Amino acid sequence: MTDAGRILAEEIQREGPIPFRRFMEVALYHPKFGYYTRGKDPFGRAGDFYTAEQIQPVFGILMARYIRSLFDEMGGGTGVVVELGAGRQEMKLFLPDLEYIPIEAGKGAMPVRFSGVVFANEFFDALPVDVAVLRKGQYRQMLVDFDGSGFVWRDGSVVKPEVREYLHRFAAAEEEGCIREVHLESLAWVGKISAALEHGFLIVIDYGYTRRELVRFPRGTLMSYRRHVASEDVLQDPGERDITSHVLFTAIEEAAAAKGFHTAAFESLSRTLLRAGEADRFASVLEGVSESEQLRRRLQLKTLLFGMGETFRTLVLGRAQNKSGPDSPGPL
Ligand SMILES: C[S@@+](CC[C@H](N)C(=O)[O-])C[C@H]1O[C@@H](n2cnc3c(N)ncnc32)[C@H](O)[C@@H]1O
Image (cartoon, rainbow, N blue to C red; front, side, top):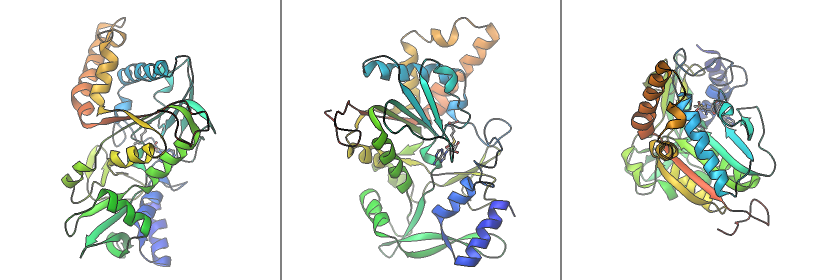
């Protein structure tokens, strides 16, 4: 059994079955044994998965361009870029003229009040979620139990009011047995960003769906990754594999709108990168490097524009200058 698994099994033996959100929290973020906190690099060829952000330098050059275009929209000049779930801090190198603040699980903090850009690549999909299942017209919380040899799912009691409210808004009129993830932590992060960001943009890049697309996932979207193999069994080997839940973009968008943000863009990642690159026909990416490096970058471009870039989406939320403080809706 993994170390995180032992901690979870002991907790379950002591207190009974636990909400999936708690399981995911320990599996990914236990201070010593969590997948992201145990000190082992999960990314790249020797790790478990690649993110688009790790396709460097092409991702960094184009995304930095896009971020600069947002600063231009804000009136130019320099400012702060806060990266949520910064991982290897891949964007730092490409933003030398801006103040770059990385925030990682348990490390770093958002400035109290600032103007600039909050950048989140595959951050929201890594936040712990509750899971609910529809039984006889009522959503029940899905719990994790330990049966002596492994972790198993159990139906729990009817969901709490805040979970019910979320499901009512985003997963109404579903079929019996339908499984839904509930992203309350994502909404809490929108609140934190809103409380701090006076003027600027939030860029969310992730895979996910809108409220209308939800019907495509009747069994939910939880996935786990280990050594580049995806599995739907997210209860296996806690602490040694990544666990993700697709982002519900509509929930983030509506929570931000309620705080005075407007949607500046919602498109495929390839579209965002294409727009950033087409201004100089990708010269900033392809010129002034050796032939072999150019070939490498062309392959990266191909992956970002036609592969991963089609799967991932960019949601950009903007907040205009707000004289009365970050958390009251500004003039849009
Ligand atoms: C899938 S990784 C993405 C890393 C990087 N952005 C990239 O695309 O390569 C998700 C990251 O979010 C971080 N993370 C999760 N919860 C967090 C939290 N509450 N505060 C800060 N970072 C968090 C994880 O530790 C992990 O580094």
